Image (tube, rainbow, N blue to C red; front, top):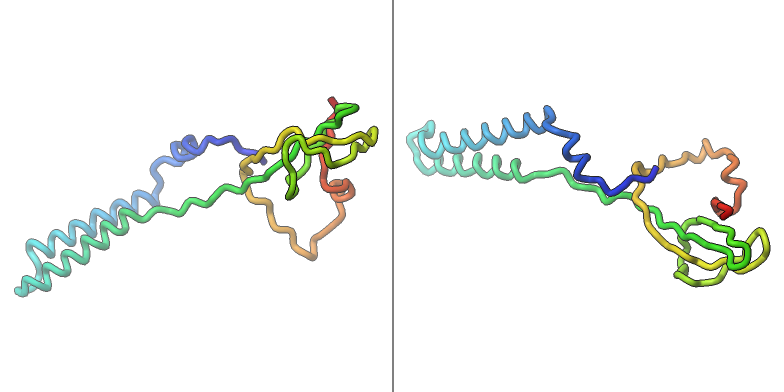
Length: 153
């Protein structure tokens, strides 16, 4: 679920695909066609040949510059709370108003104050699949309030 920041390795793994080879071939063909029209042409009118050549050169270079848009990776911000009395550690989703050293929640174990020790963001590998309204079923995780993870230290 959580991915490390290794974007360079993903680029190297993709390699040379059929789609990129086809795009390269089309770019070379358009540039060669543009050069052909500019220098040799097919009609006696030099201006129409020149403008057709420029048109094909522009199409080829535009296609060469087009790249797939990178999507911003989905990130999840987490808050780590530690009880000041019993050292119970709680990991939960970030809430608005959370900041480090803030003592706001009560410990479930000893009713002491939970202090926020860390707030960090992690990149998710995949976007969570949208849940359809018809398929909503109660799971064990839904019964836990706020989907908090408790870790005893």
